[in-house]
View 1: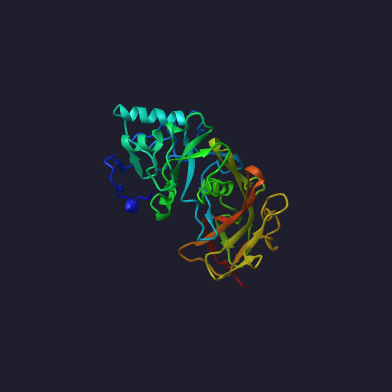
View 2: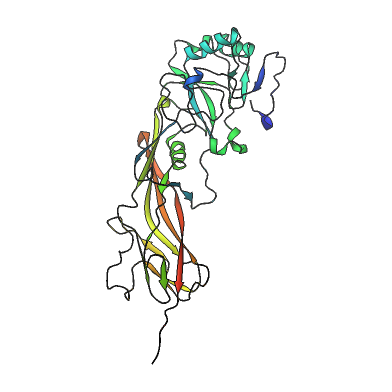
Length: 355
């Protein structure tokens, strides 16, 4: 079943309550133990399902890297068409938890969320999950909530960052059963690559500015040295785990290059491409040393004209190479990411007096 334009769904011959899921509609579990969409703990106690479409049990942790330091920033994918997953399915309730939710419903409790956008009332829940009489096109129903079987009931979850996208409502299969240690045969199953893409969207990298010499004011035709210390940019690794499904992925962002844009055509970059590679020790460029003013820096800029009243806007973009590995030996790559900083560069003419 599918909710069209987030509107109500009509079931032929049914007088049961079918409404849009809303923050006020309790689903299964304890309202006080809900998880935010970023996830901070697992689903071990089964008390995390609510009617919030973006509530997830995916646990996200930063394994390594400096992205959690001062001023962490999100990466921008190099591929403008790349997006994190819009939705996926997750295990949300054991048979006992589903039965408890329906028992509360019989006593006047809140409706049960069966998709990211729909909640059901007592008649539909009892018919589908207690009596085992199928009320949907994708299920024959579940006798006595499948109590005694090893597995869980699953439901769609919407990525909070994409909740207004049409694609976020593709995970509209009604609350369904999945045997333990298996994943749904569906393109929106939470496979390692889906979790890896979810983790990519959570990566934060340090927003440190590049080191410059001269620092804030350069001279026309005098090379400006640019570098980054090896301790500044390191790999950042983020882990996304859906413990109840036994699936995990770790996504790693590795800095591989610095690109310089002087902010004016009246400048030369070193190297000429403006791309400064990462050194073997993880640093970029070479720090300026006394007496090196007239030398050509391995990474730097030479301005050919004074900036005048307004400084040039020097842009420094770090490219981060993205790879991942996950449960079952799965691994792969994702589009490179970039982070750009802008720094003021005042450039003045060197005055000389001829005698």
